[in-house]
Length: 249
Image (cartoon, rainbow, N blue to C red; front, side, top):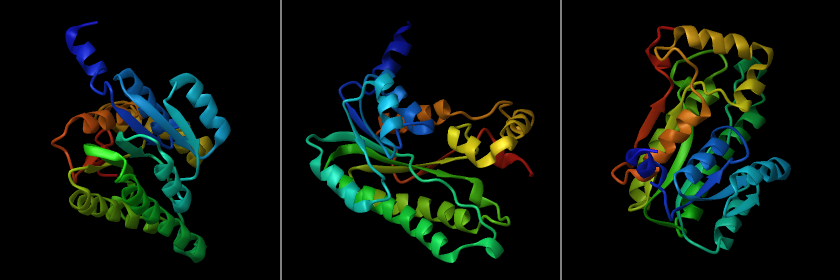
């Protein structure tokens, strides 16, 4: 291993990262990346069995099974955490696509409110545990930036999260707050949303994206660790989509 590679692997030495949504996809890959960079991980996920399997691989400092949308439980988690941490990243929460004609307004309202409440709850309840110049990092998306049938809720959240991150960066300073806006990422969630169309979507992206491959969770995890390590970054949104937004369609 070269000197530069060794330095990169130790960027998070002696640091602890809380990863919410750590049992699969971007969250699990981030936990792996943190460990490879010399850091410790607190793995948080909703499903206890999946969390246990992921923890057996990652060997975290600790784990907690909870739904981050339950803000009372989230508050209790941070209150009970017996040590300070350096970074918190949340990959929890998925998109909601529903055309207006088929929309359940009450369900949609719950989804929108829960996502905003979770974001604000993470900011409010983690602030006493994250060290100065540490990071609160959220994962959002780019898909809602273009209007489309069924994208109303996703578009509204896509627009709201960058504004939230910027304002929270001022309120929580010197804790840093940032947002990663991901395009299509090849995760189990993406596969479950697309079903039998997933292979066609992958092939379409391989042929059309400027990078000529599909963005994977490891790409997002690498960006997340970079944001954690670079103490000059706060209040910003970082796109990662393989150049998808450059395409006309």
